[in-house]
Image 1 (cartoon, rainbow, N blue to C red):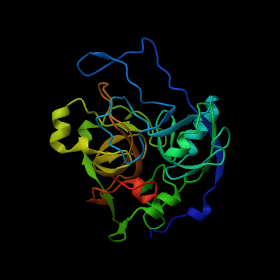
Image 2 (cartoon, helix red, strand yellow):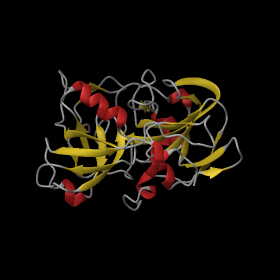
Image 3 (cartoon, rainbow, N blue to C red):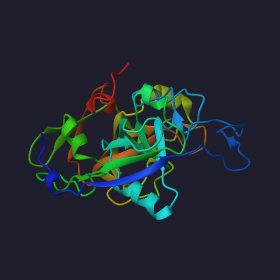
Length: 287
């Protein structure tokens, strides 16, 4: 287990409400062939999709597993986004499911929370959910050159990270993503929202096996410096998390959320097809 400053972190409550799915006029989304489509996927409660399920092949767009929450006040919503980390605990504070517990699995346009199927049956749009936010400011005491993003202490403790020497660590991932295929979200800082893998070239996705990605998979990106925004830097490495599903939109695809990054070649990885937070955080068994 890597040494962290977890005992110095602030743990604070933040809350939001389950969002109603919404469309922008004219409702249609043009796909990569210019064909207009209407597809669900973002916001609300997804009854049949959870972390651990495939990121591809759904008849949906930007599918957000579990329940998606936001806050109607913009400043409060920013706090919800910036303070929440993967692995934070959640509790339902209104409605029929009051008292039920969940866990944060992603950050997209909304904060994404996994609940057991029987709990999701009781959730309603508008229900309030409170999070125990903890993780911003987390650092690896013996590897200060490796920056953590959106990681709770519980997540770091759960990941089987190996210490190689006093400079390098090794992390399990399901696959490596080519930085040339990283698209929408490059302009956003890595403490806020994800970056999409561009999947318009379906043949390439199949050839590289990228279309086998699952929601919750850990992935590696070589030459990706995510310390300040997301940019190309030779030798840099970033480890990230697949948090939402594929998209038909040009320049979009599964959402990839930064977990750790380094401007130098200090993060190695090993391929493990089961490197998924569904297992590491004891959310569910992988199929």
